[in-house]
View 1 (cartoon, rainbow, N blue to C red):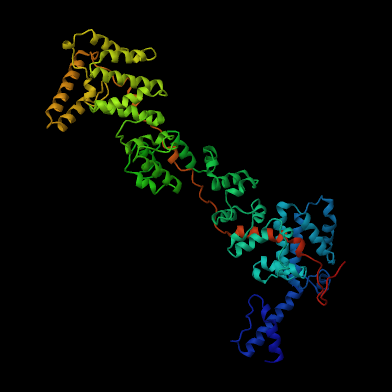
View 2 (view 1 turned 120 degrees about the horizontal axis):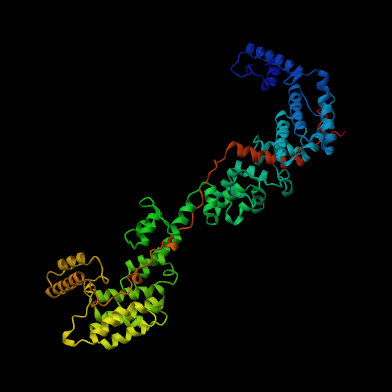
Length: 576
């Protein structure tokens, strides 16, 4: 290739818009013509820039400030004008730098331009300083101004993504004090997709300012967790609430959740408060409601929706039913009582002294045995109930009333009367039964009616409205057992007679209050999971977030980037 070709080759990398680049596929004539067009364009650019005409004399003056070429001059002038506009005109501390820049813009470029720019950037308002500093240094990098230190050139090239971090030597990496906000470390970790390399020191510096999208990235990768308490490091209250909901949702009350437009905490609070809820069939709260009602066929399905620790707790509930013995923390949740009773059928007398749950089960078990006609087993259970000194007054009254009824069935009227008389001093509900016993004691043995309460013989509480249905069911079930069928028919006739005469005074009232035998209807608090973390609401790795991190990294490294300009003909720095 000739000299002309060589010149074209040397200039080939700088073609302007509309000028074809010189490639190996072009003929020699085409290459020469392209070079001529490019030379013409470069000559035009040498005298005219984007901001207007730049003559050769002005270009020579700008060289003293380290700015070379018309295009660079125009770009620097635009940057300087923007910098001046961002300054506080009334601030006396900025006057020297501002006057220096104005002089340069008025056609008197000076080597003091770079120190003036650096001074203005270092004292600019923090809220606007990051973006302004990034804009200035980005222009310095893009235009290729020799305003940067050698390490600064390499660092800025890495930050701008021109070269990988691996190109930095150990001496080029910012020291801890040179990366005060951790922005350089964060920017490189994001570029390498390796957020796990950030240290606790980095996180403490990063969290107060990083975009929420980046904070969410740190959360999702497990680098940032609730132990760091990032919500305490943000200034904006809405961001504090957001991070609290993302990492410590149990600390978010219903009001705060509503302010975030987040329904789950309010739903959980309403569920546990017993408020009416209408969960979707098969959802977590639907299954928990069914568990609270004692439905055992939903346990396997519930396993799949509970977190691991609650799955283990549910298994403890099921395992305890095999022996009727649970750790104290299980029956402490009254919302589990119906499920526990559905899973456990006592085969022997229950000790009521073991706790409130067992006391209620013992009372219910005694009642069931009485209704089933298992008098011997019922007596064993009732004996444990009346021996329980720690029983509530309500349960004690029911237990002694059962004791008296069993004595009545054995025709031991004196024992029955004495048993109820001790209760009558504090509970007037037994007065009707006491009156019945008193009348029966005054009646000759052969003149006494059968002592059993016909409702109980049908397995129902006293004066139950469902006795006819129960009698029909008993007839179907006992049609092959004449004795049981006769007993059911006797009960039916006695109840019908009482209803005709509206006189139930000959029926021993048991229980005194059916509500005392009912299981609680509260929700199972210990099986209700804590509120799950609020889902992410930011977009992953947006350009705006990455730009914010990059700008912060550039601004942080400002003191290590800018230096006095290098002269084009010497490998040293100039001073004023």
